[in-house]
Each structure stands twice: as structure tokens, then as C-alpha cells.
Image (cartoon, rainbow, N blue to C red; front, top):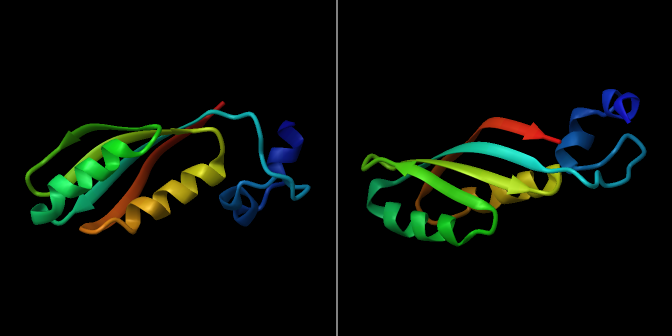
Length: 102
């Protein structure tokens, strides 16, 4: 398994595929996120984030910064969820600041 992971391209990893083109399975991914939202839209962004499965909000500031963790089964789910967060009304940016998988 370690040999296969070493031969992954960045594109395969972001797409959640193994070096053989198969989806990566059986993992547990924990990601730390910082989301920056427009302050006047913060309440709606927080409601939407708290409704997302596997996402926990750990803190927010009146300036619109939100600290959250995301737990997903695959890398593809991490990337997909980051895209969903980025599309929320009022979100200015989303940064992946930590990622661990088992």
C-alpha cells in the first residue's frame, strides 16, 4: 500500500484516486479549516456549516473568521466539501490548514 501511495500524482490524490485509477477506500480523513465569511453573512454561514455532516465549528470571530474540523471517509469527500463551503453565500475563502488520514 505504501508503494502505491508514493506513486500517486497530485491530481490523483486530489481526485481521490489510487495510482491505478481506483477510488481510495477505507480511510478516515480529519481536516482543519479556516473559513472567512463576510461579517454581515456570518450567521447564515455558521448555520450552513453546522448543518453539514462531519463538520464541527470550534470558533468564530465577529470579523467573519471560522475555525472548523471536517471528518470524511475519502480525500475526494474533503475536496468536494471544500468546494461546497466555498460556494456558500457570504464565504470569501476557505483554507485547508491541517489534514490527517489513517
